Image (cartoon, rainbow, N blue to C red; front, side, top):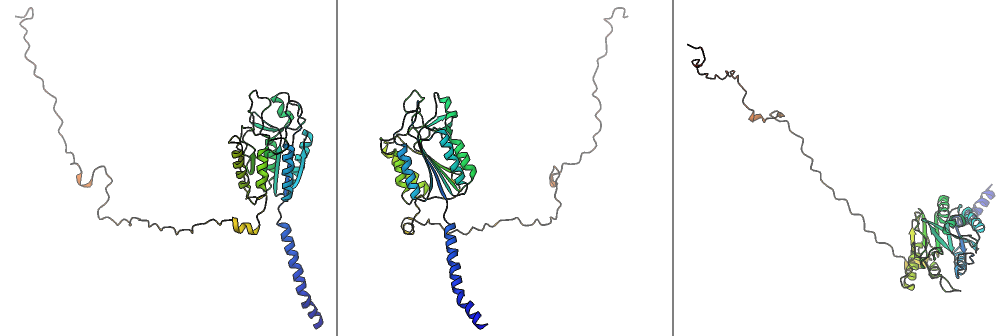
Length: 333
């Protein structure tokens, strides 16, 4: 019996050590938040829509940096309407598991009657009225993402180019959008257009965005700094739009390291709460019982009008009538 007890005591530290390591591993695995992105780049347009130079380059670079930052990336280029819908459905299924979802689209986008549409390469659009049947409505994408209810969704559109159906050059762009719980950014402001950049390179917006996604910056700082760069480098002609409707916490593409937190993070100074000033309420003392009764009559107690006495009835006024003179009457004698 003594030998059995000794054996149990000797094995106990190994059991606790193994259990402790198992708990650590479970905790580390559970702390990793899922990251899923759908990245689409459309360049080879047909029909009335012009071919674009850089959406494929932009999309590939965004895909690469997202994969390096722990994202599972669903990637498509030169998508038809059918393949674009298939990629979106795959994306919706993935983000149902929670975490962070990001949708990036580079290509042609058109605003029609206040609604934004992302255009696949095979869209047969002869007139602007064909857009709603041939393209994919942005609000349907954002509503679907919003209804899934994962922690955070990010939508980035480098699709604010010229409207091919407008007679005036330089008109186009997308309409403002602010879905609740999401972070949305356009490569330029609502109703404005963005440059496609030099062939073989990157668009101005995506080039700056990639640079700051690689830095240890909060989501808002990434897009704020991108906007500043784009505005400066475009000679104040292009000003990216930011619609921040997020609810549940912040986000880092590049997670800050412990050392950078020590050097870059500044603890906000919070003033200690001041004691509340005690306000003394001056409550009136209880009303003492009055020696004299309170008078609520229309007249003060000491100024009561005298009681009216009986007044004799006034006699009717007597009028004087002069005696009548009948001598002028005929026959009077």
